[in-house]
Structure formats: structure tokens, C-alpha cells
Length: 318
Ligand SMILES: [Fe+2]
Ligand SMILES: [Fe+2]
Image 1: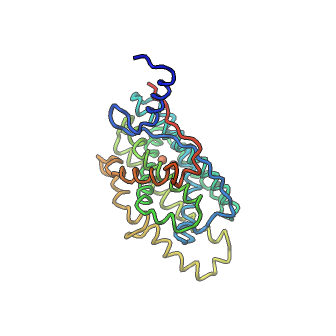
Image 2: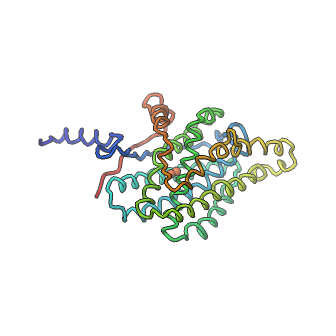
Image 3: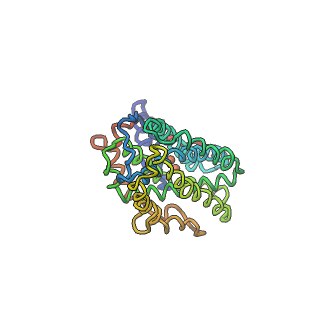
């Protein structure tokens, strides 16, 4: 059947909007452009449950993570050329696109955090040491493994956040809420892509585990240690304040507590990665994704709707 121009346009629109490929039901991931225009005066430095150190952890994560995302982008770009499956190739393009916009938007947030006296420049320098002299210099097969490892940790974090929606609403800071919820949604949407690329191009179990540990040390240990400095940097008087020292165990519990903490309660999920037949989709987040796509992206009521400027799906190329 010959399609007229308007029909062709409509068909292309329908195909672009389709959430699944027809061949194998693999979700097609859109790239969303966002515009937050952060106002430093409205940034809440206690965004995370009003806990200064736990909030500092997320601010530090925002600073260090942009370098991790840049590593994911460069590594995915390098390996995309070796992938034969056009659908996986297309999904890698979506991963690159989503991460590029995460990195850009978090840099904008980080620039605004400078204005509220967070040690952004110092942490950028430290992140530079970790990546410029360390992780970015690893050989490509190891970077491929590290990429999958980083994406595992962001998937763990995203699942925790999706399971604890109330955390985002503790503060009135709507823009920090929006950027973290958007990031959470997309990390979960693309959580299997880096892993599938790794399996397709390497599939070496030992190397996969070797990439897990630098991701664990950077995200759990280095960033946590760096965030301990934030309250002193903001106000050196905190060093002698009883309130600050009392806050440490509280924030520690929020991040590492075994019962409800971000990583403490996710240990099973984190270390499930060490299972030889692990796959990210063993942890089913499809119901969360359905719920949050409506909650965040509904054209009338979506939390992200005021900040979303454009959305598109990369073309399928062989
Ligand atoms: Fe990201
Ligand atoms: Fe990611």
C-alpha cells in the first residue's frame, strides 16, 4: 500500500511513540530534553529528609556522577560500532542520549550548588583525579565492565527511590525533586542496556566482577567520605557544633541502615550482581515504571511536565 505524505507522517509518529519494538518486545527508550533553570536561592541544602549529611551525600553524588556518566557515554560510543543487532545499537544511542542530558542537567545543578557554598570546585578537582588519572585510563574491555557496574548501582539507587516516593516530598524544593525523579526514572528505564552490551561483546564473568568493585568503592566509599566534609566547608563552626555530630548517625542510618537505608536495605540487590547468571531485569521494575511515567510525565499533572522541552526516539539503523 502506498502511503500519502500525511499518512507517512502519522505512521512515523505512531512508530516513534510506540513503547515497544514489534520484533521482541524490547522497550524503546526515548531521549528527553529538560530545562530546569535552577535558582540557587531556592535550593534546599537539606533536601534529603531534612538531614544535612544525607543531603550532602546526594549533592556530592551529583558532582561525582557527571564524570561517571561521561565515562558511560564515551565507553558506550566506542563500543556501539561493534554491536551487530540494530535494536541494541538503537538502545545504546538512547543510553548515550539520556546520560548526556543527565550529565548536562546535573552540571547546571552543581553550578547552582556553588552559590550555596557547596565544595563543587573542590569535588570536581577530586573527581578529576579519580577519572583523569584512574578510571578513564583503563583499557576499553575494563571500561566496558565498569560501565555495566556503574549502571548497576544507579539501577539499585533508582529502584530504592521508586520504592520510597515520599522522600522526594519532604522538601519544598520542586526542582531538586524533579531532577532526581527524572534521573531515577531514566536510570531504571535503561538499566539493562549497558549490561546487554557487556554480555554481547565480552560475556566474561571475571572481568564483569572486576568492574563492579571500582564502581562500589567510588559510589559508596569515596562519595560518602567526601560528603562528610560538606557541612564543615559550608560553615567551619559545625566542627564544634553538637547538633552536627549528633546528625552523623542519623544520616548514616538513612544511607547505610540495614532496615531502611538507601544502600543498607539494598545489599541483596547490590551483591546479586555477583551471581554468574545475573541480569538487571531479574529485578522487575515494570510496574514502578508504569506508575512513574504517569506520575511524572502526564501532560496535565506530571511533575516533570513543566521542565520537559522535547522528547524523541533515536532512529533504528543497521
Ligand atoms: Fe544518569
Ligand atoms: Fe544510567
